Length: 294
Image (cartoon, rainbow, N blue to C red; front, side, top):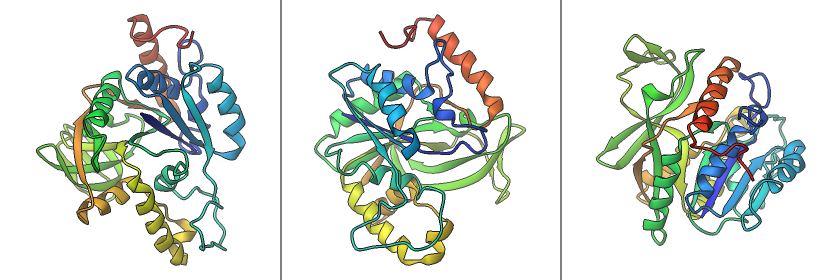
């Protein structure tokens, strides 16, 4: 089983590259805890998508730590990585988005895989539930979202963006991207739209379980995207949007797999203290070895 980590962000609100911040008790990166949880649940292939200037460092860093039997691919998300026969002549500095990050791995993944953000902590049970789902659905085209409750994914230091999900039973119906969610008493308010939420809604934290069929869909969307010069200048391709289009076209089913664990992220620099404390506490409780890698 493959775990794909997206680590090509710039950390603009955090103030530095949070993917490489030494948050663990022995200076471990946050992504290393996710990788460890994945390996403990049967994942044996790690794919990391990063920037070109970080590729060698990250490849060296992880190869020194991962067991020898674990396959590792550290790939670069490039602005020049375009579908055959397409081109882009405008000026752009930001990556093409999370869907393009996933598409970057199209030549190294040929089976079911999980996708996560490298700068989020998802909880040990989330990886177990994801692995169980992959084993149960290895030969079909069913995707999944490992879901969290909105109220459990907020920051006390500023607004956050979340994909708010409509769910029926264990079936995902839709994902509505909300970009400025903040606590509002016992509710959650979206500052952009004015919408109010109870906080008990499922949200996407970009922990997806995908099949290789997504690569063809992303490429098709990317071709359409590049044909629109305005989109190509500043917009991005997002995983939830791609999966939702596949879902609405009847190409796939998408199940919601409960995480049954605790999530935290480091959106703002002020989130760092909390992250360090949680990882220290979990390590002292024996949930993680220290050092993490032997």
